[in-house]
Image 1: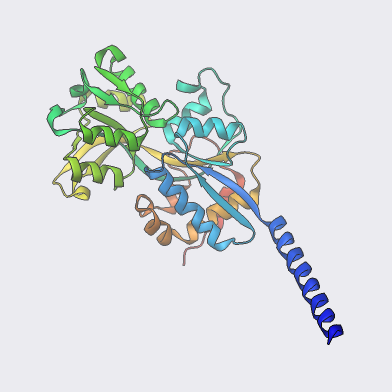
Image 2: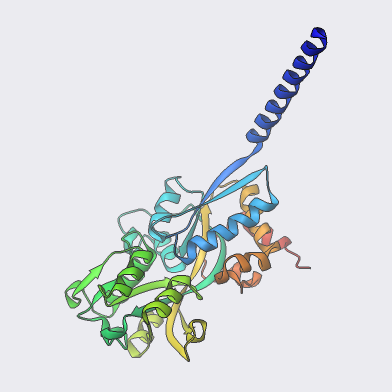
Amino acid sequence: MRAGLLGLSMLRLVLALAMGLGVSAQAQDLRLYTLGSGDVSGSYYAAATALCDATNRVERGHLRCSPEATPGSIYNLSALRNGQLDFALVQSDVQHMAMTADGPFKTAPPFNDLRSVTSLYPEALTILARPGARILSLKGLLGKRVDIGLPASGRQATALRLFDALGYDRNDFMALLELSAGSGLDELCAGRIDAMVLITGHPNAGVARAISECDARLVTVSGPDIRAFLEANPDYVYASIPRGLYGKKGRAMTFAVMATLVTRADMDDDIVGALVRNTLDNLLVVGISAPVLDALSPNAMRSTGLSAPMHPAAQIAFDQYNPQ
């Protein structure tokens, strides 16, 4: 009896060791990579989560993508350059600034190792105003308390680029605040700021909340000054926001950039290829997971708004894509 128990104990020990070795080997095979996004309440984080989930489902046990909340595009590009992130979501205009050492990157050398992975969706310049502020146009922001986003965010870079082109400076506003998107929406609904400038895809949950809970208004951005700005800056395109997405009538005219996914030239081909391939093969699921991704076009994904050269593995994945 005792000998039988000893034999059973030995068998359990062998099985436990074998299972441990198996788990250890599997852990060694698993490769982790990070995807920088934006504020947890914004479209970037939702998009990054959807993109990561698409790969994690297919590549389980081999690749693991982690969406990381960040302050935004400028932070993402700096962290990508420094190796703190493997992939990053960035605005197309900010991508161009990094490539040309312009705007917030004037003190840094051109990011020559930056590589495009895919273009995603248009992000409209979105101005939300509290109803009592009487802001009916871009010029209506003058003399008001306006949130333009965190210093490391793409929306601040775009807002300041626009204001500079129009001849506005900080003294023209009662205050320019630098808040996260979530905090800005809270302050707007509390009446402590008059407006906020967002760069976002639509529909957007935060915009919907502000419109439904505190009657925030979408402000039209148009006119001769805006036409001149767009003609001088081909990074931007004309766009409009359907107010019907938020239970209202009509459209708010504005302009847009593209949300783009980028990496470095040294990123492993198989990781880049898997990310693009699994996104293309699961466009429907990705769109359900993040509504801003529900109208992705493979043709547009490989070219629109991409200033950096495409990563070779991403190019191959697009070339081999064969929709069923």
